[in-house]
Length: 317
Image (cartoon, rainbow, N blue to C red):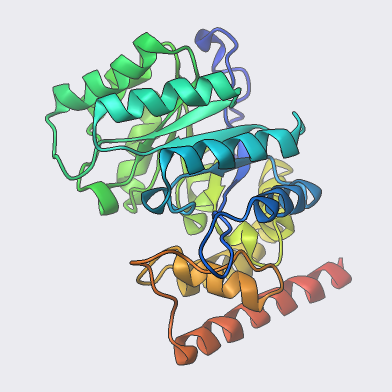
């Protein structure tokens, strides 16, 4: 059993600290690819009723690249209204320029979100000092809690330990969504800043491995296939030291589901699989194309097997 981390983050002036399983929500669209406002409400409510600990909107899985700033605000407002304080709502602030990120952060704070998930600037390939000033500018002009978002596979930027340590000292930086796949490197990050900020998995197959070295949860996508119950139970099992149950769910549900939906055109495949498993959120917008019929059939087979395994495992308990 790993050392408990509760109470380690008091230095953040009792600000919001992310912990547990948060759903990285897709953004529902109609078949004509208009924003489906009713679909946003349904998705948030479904997740909350399934026991999710929080939701993240307008981030990568939420197709931020395909949303106007007006649509981002609409999605956040609907999510906050629907959640009505029952779970935290985090807004994705994914922007290439500091000016754009700051505008989004100000709107996010004004709307009343629990925190902002802020990606490192992409495409422009800034220096370490430029990255630091990007986050510092947001922290200086707003008071909203900031969850750093490190996603080297998408941005080609990987926060080094010195920079991450500086960022962790910013008073409003409360967490890190970590998409680095090298568990050794992740452990080093937990060692260096895990006493100052909460570090969450950015991929569902890293939740269990990271937990044993101080990981505080997961910003998950597999919670939208059949519902959040399996992944939430996996986390609860870890917290209750029921390691075998957590590992069973990890290997039989989280891993196969994640690997079948993480294909080209993310998040188009997860939207396709959501529709095939009874919770349609419509299509993705171009240039994101859905998987072919043959690939979709393979995905459905994997999902059916994982969902059947979970249902059967519950009956055995």
